[in-house]
Length: 365
Image (cartoon, rainbow, N blue to C red; front, side):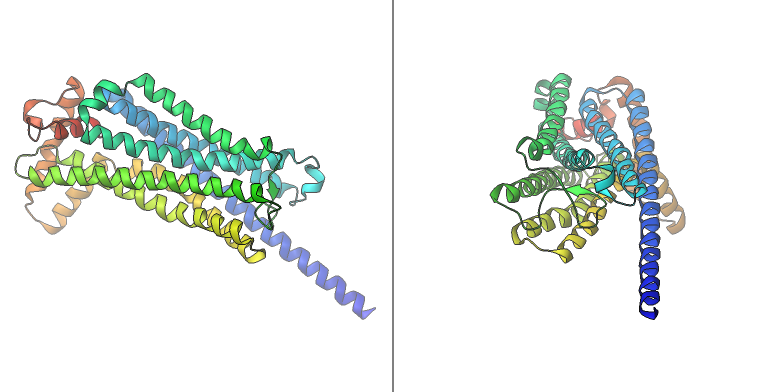
């Protein structure tokens, strides 16, 4: 009898611990989803407001991709977050509410689609910005608006195709060991196809991340070089500072949030790790979701108006008469003239001989 009582007490303790852990996980999911929805909604409002206020041809593609990125992140938080809450509401008993693995398939497809789409969009945005800054004539004459819209549709279509590959190849998504989400079958893969699918996801993500880093680095180098060469003549300082800050922030957020997940998937799928690997995979998945939360704050916080306030506070606190600060203040008038005309006014361009500064003035929001 005592053994049975101790066993019952142990069972009740385990159930209580599991219930507490489940409640904490649900709360964390709800908070993460709410913060993500709020952040992306606010960023989308700012981008739409910026687009309606300043209609410049060279900025149209940037605003299109930026808005698409924010919308993708918003839908990712809404759909994936709802699926997580749905799973926890049934105490993660997949056998009861999903006997035919329909929910698991939908969950896996959404995880892959909303994971790859922001990476692809970030890479394309980096390339587009690099072309716009370093090759402005080619950008304005060749990369028309309808081309950008088609490219955006192809990005979403390609991400959806990769997400549907396990279903099309009869390699269904698998409930992971934590029983709170579905993903590729990586634990003890049956054959080379089970290894190929997660590797394809990781390699495509790493390629997009590398493309983003290279494109942003080239753009950053071009802007810094132009800034150094025209230090005493440039009136568009705020545009350069805004773009440099955004590029550095986007690169840092993407590398920190996505790098561990993509590398971990390669390690897990090739070495077929068991429980410890699965737990660490859940941890890096949660890290990756923060990319969709932090991305919109890059556009919210690192705007010209916010950066100007920071410069003003620093100028007031330190009392330094910075030449760059006066350039920053004067550049605010340039933005009005540029936004109204669509072509940089003569006194607002760094050097009329070079197309780089004129493009940068028109390009950066």
